[in-house]
Structure formats: structure tokens, C-alpha cells
Length: 103
Image (cartoon, rainbow, N blue to C red; front, side):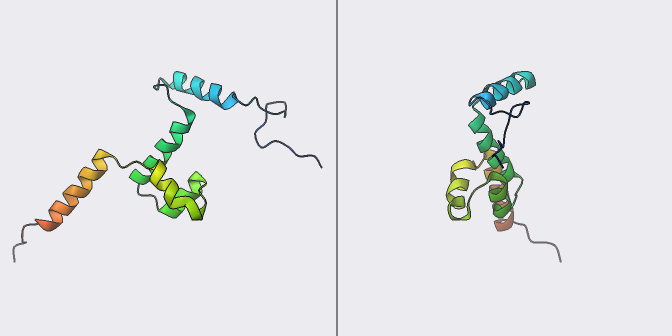
């Protein structure tokens, strides 16, 4: 039995190596989104998963990261945002400076 392609053209043949590049650029234009590299979408996806509080093991599975290097990949791809930092700072402040509740 012959080997097939994972990603193939409509006729079943191989894709041109830059097909994803052209499809990505067309998608960005159609959506009215600023130009960016396709690889940047991986960083965005990882950061969105972080913002959503998705457990690391699930993030690793979604992103296709191997268990041995997953922590390194999370550190590289997941970006802590200003709103995330402010939320945690507020939570810490509320915990430390919570007014005593009335008896």
C-alpha cells in the first residue's frame, strides 16, 4: 500500500510548500486582521489558553508539545498579559488588606 499525504491538494497530490503561507495571508486579508506570520498564531493560541486557565496537560496536548520539553515550550509561547498581572495583584491586595467582616 502506498503512502498518502496528510495534507493534500483537492486532487490528492502534494501541496506546494508555501500553500499554507498564501492561505494564511488571504485569510488575514479577508478577516480584516493585521498582517502577521502564521507562526505568530501559535503564540496567540498558547496565550489564549493561558488566559482561559486551561490546565497545562491540556495545553500541551492541544499544542502538540512533548511532556519532556513542555514546560520550556510553555515558557516560550505563553505570554503573561497586563490584565492578567493586574487581576492577580488585585486578588493579592484583596487577600492581604481585606477589611474584617462584622460579627
